[in-house]
Image (cartoon, rainbow, N blue to C red; front, side, top):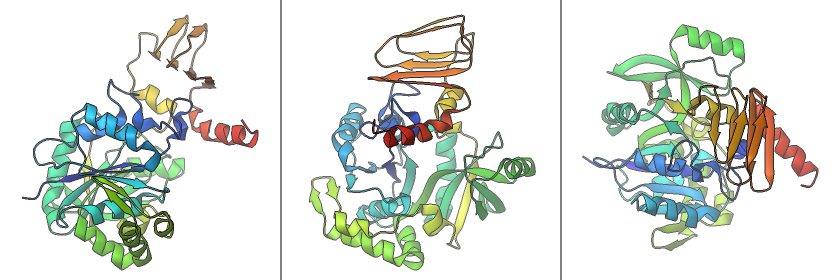
Length: 350
């Protein structure tokens, strides 16, 4: 049986975890949840028996950092595809599918910056999906929800077509709170975690059917680009002509043979400092602390520093993050506003 090829998408900038995550060193390059970086953890969970060397699709500016981090865990990518510009997940996956050595290879598409605590459950879900994938189905993994989150898209789980594998009834955009609560109560919805398994040729056929202009632009970007060893640099001009679309919108929502494998695997996209606090080990006062931090009479705070010392006295429910010359202070529960803060700083010219 053909080995599974991990496809690691590492194009994101991770600005919601500023000031530690920056365009120069985004969150997947940081050791936020363990001793290893998020990129290293992603590569490690899809390594070993049945897995081939990964294809990594990344921002060109991070090439050296990615190679260093993967080499440190003994991982040698079969291809490092360096996007000249970001064009969302559908063109990125198309690059990987076109560069796969075997067109019937199952591609396991994973964002590089997610946490999966139960790796065994993740791998079991992948193997559950494989028989349908080999028949040409496009499979997504639905995360068993434990809260009415409004920051995630959802998947309505349809009829079972194989044990553990269901048709996708429909994809649901990020919902308002009342709708999220109703979907959670119904028991037939899962979070859309953005992890997929499909054969390279099946994905390319679907793309040819639903987004032929995108496929054409990506093909030309590879043909007109440069190759040096395992490094592939698509042409900027051709790649810029690919529509900027997610894989859900371009393919998954439109194709007929789309299935979902529901799985509870301790998944988190670590999309904010609040999310990181929720999954971090805390002390008896509820504080998640890393770096040089002194906290007296302090409760339920997240405090992190990669340099300067943070001193906290008599405070509760704060997020305090120091990195380089920047310090972020905000109340817990408002870390989604970091993006607005960055926009305001940009407008102020800082």
